[in-house]
Length: 188
Image (cartoon, rainbow, N blue to C red; front, top):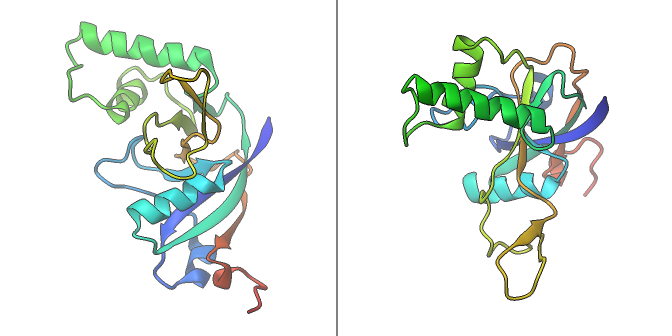
């Protein structure tokens, strides 16, 4: 089990006390990538800033928290190959039942795994949204493997964690870390 630092980016509604008292907050957008849950950026605060700048028009708050990351409670599509294979097998089952088409999303497959197959009983999920950020973004945290070739290492990838159920995750220390004038003890 690993204690993991995560960041939630929220719209700045000039309510820092409410954020720290009532947060974290769930996302229930119709197009939520992983379904309804509490979305966080894994490890890299730069991704939380990127989201705030691009999706929240530079009016955002970042909160930091910690939780116990373990692949028995978190379905890890970033680092656990067995989970990737489970996901692939679920897609295969959906294909055989003609439930898969070019409009099927990750959230739909996860819902199928949870509600139909009954094999998804995880409290959280971890994914890497490939091509989430533009290659032209500066800084881009990408390093080519070979000059003149398109392949690269993204050393601060846009990894998200969506927490569906906090019980047993030892979630703690949810606190504002940006903007600095909302940070407890900040002096001008």
